[in-house]
Length: 416
Ligand SMILES: NC(=O)c1ccc[n+]([C@@H]2O[C@H](COP(=O)([O-])OP(=O)(O)OC[C@H]3O[C@@H](n4cnc5c(N)ncnc54)[C@H](O)[C@@H]3O)[C@@H](O)[C@H]2O)c1
Image (tube, rainbow, N blue to C red; front, side):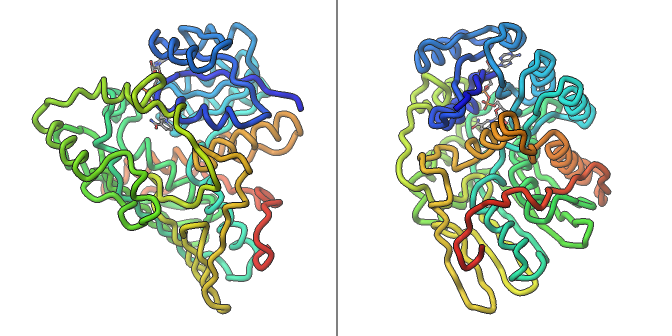
């Protein structure tokens, strides 16, 4: 098997959460990392001996020993670093959000075309098997057309340790930029991709966090299908409480969250060291987490997904999904649809890297390309504009997800 050599741009928390999935993929060899922080480079080298490290992304791209670059630097650098990599002929996977404005997204798409490389966007929870299976069942037609989609999340996203850039809306900080893409990609996948308009409100309810920590949005698709998405990241109520099989896996307990919020208000929190705990070499280093078994569904930061159809409903459930139809209630265990390796990320990283590999090596379409990511960014920006201007925003850069995406997904026989 031909291996693609991959280099990580940015070796922080997001990168560390991604690397264990790359480890289990024979299609890829993780060979290099770039980060301006020497401690991150040292941690990376200790975890991946024999790799090369660079102080800048430009140096890593110029060195010529990688085929693809995973961009996990802060949001304001996504465009610059993705373009730098593509100019050097590298394929790119860029973290969500792909960029902070539409001009950046346009330039990234143009650069991929100009240099003939793949730009993969949409490393989001839409890629988890549960959502993809619901989409295939909907396309199968047995439930009729999709008529409405709803996703709500209650998490502690906003009060987790944060860097200054994560709390600056100008740099793509806040819950809409960072978490919106998970829910938006998911409703776009399930609803076909073409959102017509967005009406939204955002909330900034904690003075110590000068960014939105809440949003609610009503999306209408071109065919009239409605979708609602909501995320409350203030950490008073965390949705996993409703799902006993995951409650124990939360990062923080109720008591932790209350203390974190109190320390934020009194200005006594040391977020730099708390965030360092979650990076490579830290106390809670994600690369050291052991993953085994056949992972079932968890709400993660996406929240449970409900899809109404003309003749039924589908929703997330413990081992996959539940389908309610004129046949009654059927619980589908989808754990075996995941690749056999335990997938630390919940399936996302394997999915996007698998898609990139198939596209580069086998010439298959890249479905989550720059145009897909740009359409999701357009919804993110419209959500923010709609909240500010208190009006419905019409969209113009949407693209459909081709029907043949996931054509071969091996659904349980009754729904194949
Ligand atoms: N935190 C997560 O769990 C998570 C998960 C998935 C995706 N992400 C995404 O990863 C990205 C980074 O977030 P994070 O939480 O990892 O932040 P982070 O601060 O932990 O990591 C960013 C890293 O980039 C480095 N860096 C900053 N500017 C640089 C530059 N110009 N050149 C080279 N290195 C540079 C920093 O030193 C740092 O190590 C964001 O786009 C975020 O959406 C984060």
